[in-house]
Amino acid sequence: MKDIFKSSMLYDFYGELLTDHQKEIFEDFFLNDLSLTEIAEERGISRQGVHDLVKRCEKTLNSYEDKLHLVERFSKTKEDVAQICALAEQRDEKSILKIKEIAQEILDNY
Figure (cartoon, rainbow, N blue to C red):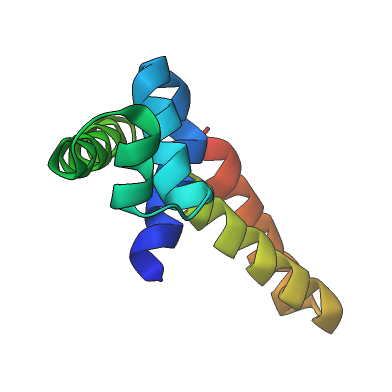
């Protein structure tokens, strides 16, 4: 399940960089939950061809993430915002200073 979530996140960020054919196959497999056989029959290609294309798409998307780190940065920012929300509930001086520190770190990274 973790791999499906990761692949979906990568697709959300970098999917538009794939060809239309790659996007269609990737969406059928990961988003529409079709089997390799179902996709192969629908597209008139071999099951192995679909498998290879899905693996190539995953490799391509991971390559983009390795270079750009957008998903990583998004996840880190999401964690930071959750921490800010938790600290905001405490409403003490130490929490406010920590909120300012986290907020400044977010701003410095973008």
